[in-house]
Structure formats: C-alpha cells, structure tokens
Image (cartoon, rainbow, N blue to C red; front, top):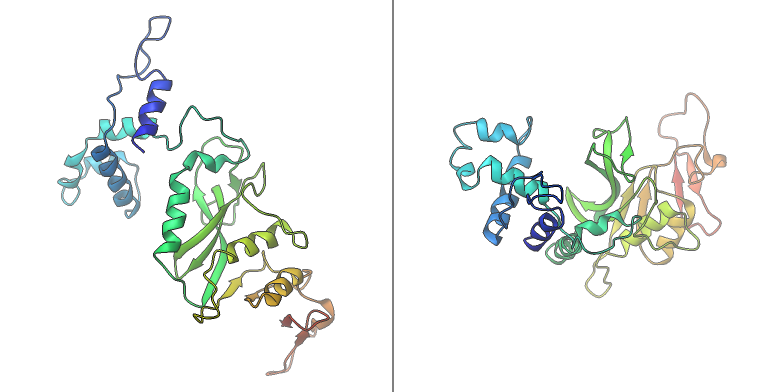
Length: 272
C-alpha cells in the first residue's frame, strides 16, 4: 500500500510539468508506512459514522478534533487521489477487475479464514459495495438498500464474511470454477462451500442457508452426496420446487403438511 500510491503518482506525473510546460497537479510527497496506517485508520473510523462526506469530519469539533490532527484534509485527499493497491505497471485483465486489489484482497480472505471458525449454520448471499462512478462491472439493483455498486457473493456467519467471489455485470463470474452439472450460480455456492473447514474426525459439519436466488435440485443433490447440508427457499415456479408438490388451494387446512421428495433419489426434501 506504500509502493502502490508512490508508483501510481509517478506514472501520472505527480504534479510535475507536462511536456507543454503546464503543471496540472500539486507536487506529490511520497507516502510513508506510518501515513498509510493513519489513512486506513481514518477510513475505518469514518466508516463507523453515518452521513456527510469526508470533508465534514475535518469541520467537526469534539470527539474528532484530536483524532484528525494525525493527518490534515489536504494530505488525506492527496493519498486518496493516488491510492493504488496493485502495481500500476502490470497489465491487468479487464474481466478480472478485482485484480486491482491484489495482493491485499487475497491476504484479507486468507486471514479471515485463518482466525475464525464459523458455526454450523452459515449463509450464502450477495452483497453490494456502493459505487456510483464509471465502471463496466457495477450493477444497478433498484430494490436493494444499496442500489448501485459492485456485487460480491459471500459466505457469512452472523455478520462475519468468511469467503467471497466477485461478480461483474460485463464479464459475469471471473474468479469462478464452473462445475459441469451446475449453473454459474450453483457453481458459486459450491465453490464458497469448499472454503469451509469440513472435518469428520473433528466433528466439523456445516449447513448452508440460501434465499431463492441460489437453490436448484442439482446443487442440493451434489452437496448432499458430499455429505454437506443445504437449505433454501424457492419460488413455486422455479425449477428447484416441483410443481406436483405445490398445493394451490386457497385455504390449506391448519397443520397439514404439503411436500415430499423433490428428486428421484430422495436426497432433497421440498416443503410448502
């Protein structure tokens, strides 16, 4: 994180004169390890607060006054402008846009799995990282709390993100290993599931819970054959729920079970 901004600033001219003789940026002073640590601490601190942009924190008094003396707004803005994680000289794949976060993003995921063991019941879901700038990879989802940004498929346990796969609007699932018998969505769940520390000898077993975007009979059967539990909701008209098990009566009697085996082998149970 120290090398990236310094190399990126140099590649962009870092405030020096252009061939035409015009200086188009203020001179860049190389960032240090200590400054990057303060910069990250400021970002984390601001992330815990709601409302307002970064400029508002330097105008506030009281609890923020002493903290933000560690770095003034001008320096914070300069580091933010040139912040670059990967080596700017590398030719990155357009499809794998998340390579710009390497090697830090892989390190964070590795540590996330090293220092935490999930409980038995975990969940797979999609999260949105807010971003309104220009990008070929962002999604627009009007019904979500965050309507625009980067989409990431994650495996979580009570708010803790254990592993993840990045998605893209233009290049679909760039970091995904497709399974022959599964759709890309099913392959996503399967790949996230492989990150869990299953161990029969240690008694480590897990059940994955999903919303109706993910389940399919093929996915549930494949996980069951490997001794892995999974449960998810499904819409009536989805392939994950057999229509012959759907009770279409308007007034179903109280305490009446509606459902049964959803596949020929009886590995999947469908209930209404």
